Length: 162
Image (cartoon, rainbow, N blue to C red):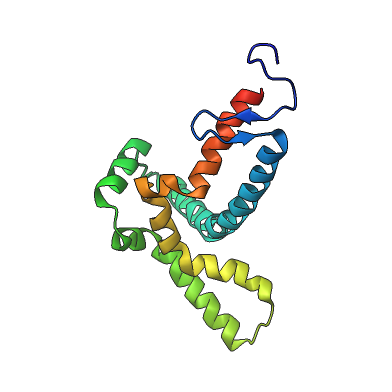
């Protein structure tokens, strides 16, 4: 790479941290972050089974009655920013929680022993809490943690490598 003065494959120093990162370091961190993303995706997207069904029912109802109840995204985001609390989030996500509790009762009553069912059940029950946590602003103290640091260093290293 003639512009930056580094050769292809040579380690790059990220300006923010002074850490020298080569392509392998970037790749290993990306793989570790991918595993974290997979776990968070299970937590976040498993409830989409219920939410998608609710959207379909609401869309069908709106189509049948001719009364759409749509809010602009700006308004929704302002509402969340002003009212954000665990109780507010629970009032918005209670259906997923109740479905999770009902499904758990069904699993217990029918003595279902499949551990993969927990991949659906746990995210449904934790949905109000996980939604609340993911809506919170990242506190400055977390920006010094390894997760934030890794993401920022990868971004800077990718810029320097390319």
